[in-house]
Image 1 (cartoon, rainbow, N blue to C red):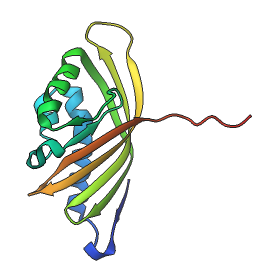
Image 2: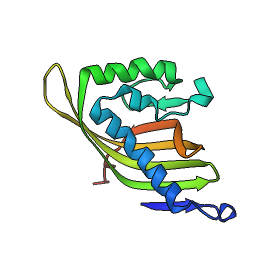
Image 3: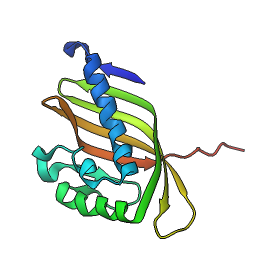
Image 4: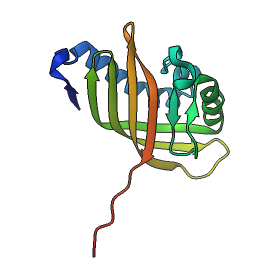
Length: 151
């Protein structure tokens, strides 16, 4: 993991870096436990409909906690998340705002049966510090792939 910050802020403290890292890891952990409330608690409730969640599986962004709750519930009701391994985490901090970019290797099973699925996703999270917590304001996932090489 690497951390960047503008010199004007003196950089993130070790405690801030650890808190942001934990906030990133809490996302797949909440899915693995099937805990909708834990997923919702990752987000900053102070900005309402300005919250944005762009997932790989949905054709449109999701805005606000009210829209996220039934979507997270649907996912947790229909899938068992087996893994969400975070790697290549890079954090940048400027004051009380940070963004984290990482890869998450998702794996899940349908509760209705069928083969387990695996999906590599690149994830970018914008966070704001509220008190001692770093809360999500924006999360964007995209599928990672290997670019074809010219013959």
